[in-house]
Image (cartoon, rainbow, N blue to C red; front, side, top):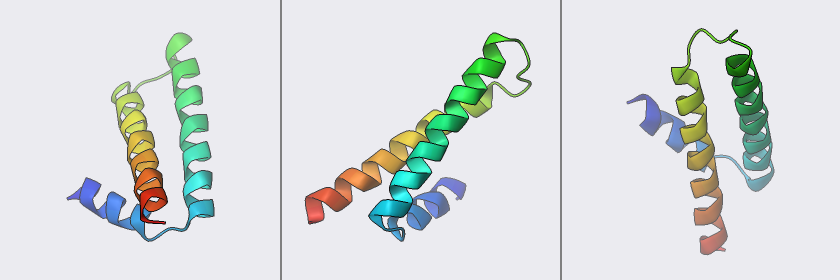
Length: 68
C-alpha cells in the first residue's frame, strides 16, 4: 500500500530529515489552504492527504523520541 511505503520510508530517516519533511509539509499545507481560500485549488482532497502526512511524520518523531 502507498501509506505503508510512506511510513516505512519515514522510519528510515534521521531526526534532521524528519524535521525538514515536517517543515516542508506544513509549508505545503499553508499554500494549499491559501489556494483554497482564493478558489485556485482544484484538488481539495490534497489538503486532507497533507494533514495526514503531517500526523504520520509527527508520530514517527514521537516514536523515535520514546525509543531514545
